[in-house]
Image (cartoon, rainbow, N blue to C red):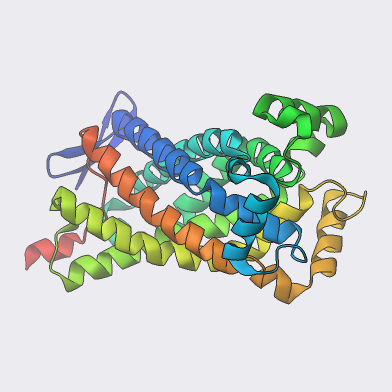
Amino acid sequence: MSIRSANAMPLATSGKKEYGLEYFLKGALAGGLCCGVTHGAVCPVDVVKTRMQLDSVKYNKGMIGGFKTVIAEEGVGALATGLGPTAVGYFIQGWFKFGGVEFFKIQAVNSLGEQGGWDNRTSIYLGSAAAAETIADIFLCPLEAVRIRLVSEPTYGGGSLPGAAAALVKENGIIGGFYSGFIPMLFKQVPYTMAKFVVQGKAAEAICTSMSIDQANMSGATTMGVALSSGVVAGVVAAIISHPADTLLSKVNKAGAGGSGGMMSRLSNIAGEIGIVNLCTVGLGARCVMIGTLTAGQFAIFDSVMGALGASKYHFHDPSSDKH
């Protein structure tokens, strides 16, 4: 890899491949599409999972039982509750998350050099994911607050994205309405994203090494297979790590949850009411299914869209292996 500058934009290059502004924009678009499509597709699972977290007494028969309860009481259409804010919110989040990870990852390699990047790839994944997700959550949090409120109260604000958003602001103000769940969202999303990218990267490396596959020159079918299999592993691990914060996020956006004090006071009250075991386990099975499927789909769609856009995802490379 050589490092050079063009128009004040440092470009990481590997062979004939260059990674500059055009690459980052393609990565952001691919990230937006992969997150918006996958989160929209698993919206029914997310509705049931959120209901289980909000009312574990009523929804106490597992994910299948939860589906039956929602359909029996509200009809099949209820499973699409919050689809609008889900698709829009996660498109925006995916734009900054996947695009940001690629940007920060490549800037780190520009700074450290290819060997330094390879030797420190785990730390680079962790730092890039944390930075990108923090930025993405600033844009995601308002839409996630609207989604959760609509799932708990389907007719809130007329049941629409604009109506529910306007009602939240009117009742609680911008900060209270849109960002009361920002801290638990960070505790949920940042560890989740850090685990997702690190585990997926390691799993993909392990798969390719065991099958003697060159990650930089995989066929479309091989890319899809590696992305799906490594994505499932990454999704389940990330779901388990981030589940307690996910439960808190669902609870804090429910009307009246945790009392009427400040955000940290409400979160503390909610955690005390739920208990540590329930905080870590209620809805976990549904979330592992949802996130495992979702994450596998995200990496597969991301790689496919990047290929369709004529871009090739940057992979860490050990330059010392070229000498053997």
